[in-house]
Image 1: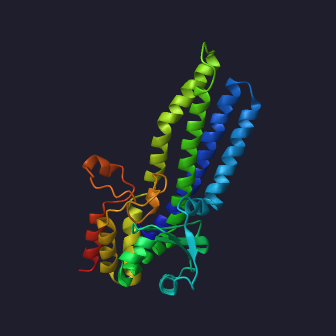
Image 2 (image 1 turned 60 degrees about the vertical axis):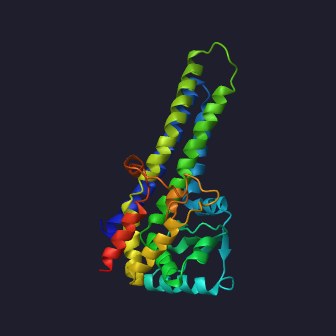
Image 3 (image 1 turned 135 degrees about the vertical axis):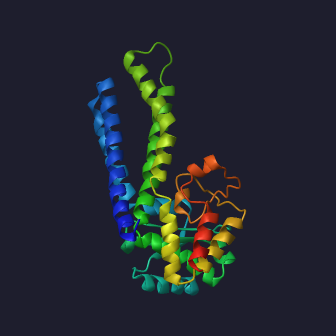
Length: 295
């Protein structure tokens, strides 16, 4: 897959998943409106679907930053980091992204935003403390590659949509449980069935959404980032340090894990079955590919 086909695929996937989300929620509203003979449920579903789709496109980056209490870094706050990002952005031919900091000892980073003109690179305090300059350049170049490859909107939209599906499913289940116990009519039984199916399938649906973001994007961002710095070993060493650090990211959750350059949970054991469900390729494979580039 080339850079340009990757960009086109990401744009298509973004609108496809937003469209599927609209169909899913509005379809559910139509079913419930017919069960209870309550047209207002359909209108409520339409409103929820439109609001969530709007938030996923326009506000997903801020939602993610708020989850981790990330704070914006200005030039005067960290001139060295600002200049590093600025120089690499110029080299990559990209607008200067905003820089955010998560105050956390676990070394990690991610990029978010809806396009290159509205992009954000977020790093942890642990990353700045642990990495040497050449290694930090590799990480920043990797995240700039995600921005240039248009990975960031798709990855951010997935966070909001997958989370919304899970929340809606749990809401229906709680609503069903809280209903008066006793004999139920046909409509109530169908409501129970829908709630049960949703709560069972919603985690799988959320996982499938994240897996739709091809693992190849990480290899592509590694390669593009290494070409940007012209020093693959810098990113390889950075990945080694990030992977060897045992401290998990505080507040890490499954909905946002795919955003980070490395697994924020620091899972120590990965068997062949677990590997099938990873949104990132094993970090050892990424390091190997980078070092092969330098040969």
